[in-house]
Image 1: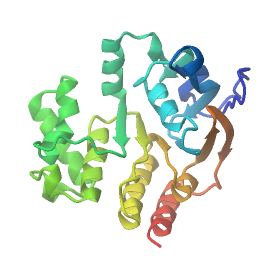
Image 2: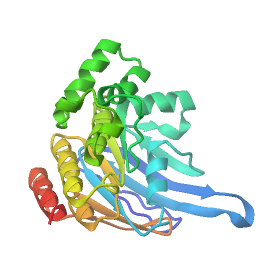
Image 3: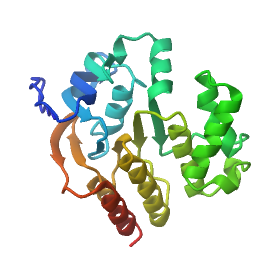
Length: 261
C-alpha cells in the first residue's frame, strides 16, 4: 500500500495481488480563489483485488469525497486513478458511466430506491440501463434478491419494506451486475444496531467469496471488521494499517455479534 501525508508522493510497495484500484497524487478542490477548499491533498492509495478496506475519519476529513473521486462519480483536479488498469478520469462521461455500470456497484446511506418500483424493478434497473435483455435482467435481479434474503418480498415497494429490507435491496442492486468492486458509503448509517450487523455480515459474506469492497464508515466496529483500516484527516491519509488476521467468515460473525450487543 502507499500512503501520502503530504503533496510528495511515495512509490507503493508491490502487493501479492495486482491492485484493482490505484490512485496517485490525487487532489480535489472545491470552489475558487480565497474560498477554495482542498478536500483531497495529493494522496496515494492501492487496493488489491479481493480486499475489504474501511475508510474512517472525522466529519469533513474527505472520506466521502475520496470514495466519489476514486469511483469516478466526481472529477479530480489532478492525479491519476486507475480501476482495473483503466484511467477512469481520462474517459469521457459516457465511457466512464458504462465502465461503472459494468464493473462497479454502489451502496449508499440513503437507499436511493425509486418509491413506485418494486424491489425486483429497483434491482434490475441498472442492468437494463447497461443494456441487458429484460428477461436476463429480471432473472438476475430475482436471483440476487433471493441471495440477500428477500425472495419473499420481490413485489413490494420501498414504503412497504423496513429500513433493513430497503438496504438489502440496495445491496442486491449493487451486486446484481456481478461487479468486481463495490463502494459503500455509510451503508449502515440509517439502521439500528441489529439490522446494521446483519447488513455488515452480508457484505462480509460477499467479500469472503472474492468481492472487493471499499467502505466509508464512522463506526469503529465496522472499521475493525475490515482487512485494512485507512484513516483520514484534513484531506490526507494519516494511517493505513492491516487489521488483525482472521478469516473473512470469522470477521463477519464477529462484526455481527459486536453490532448487536
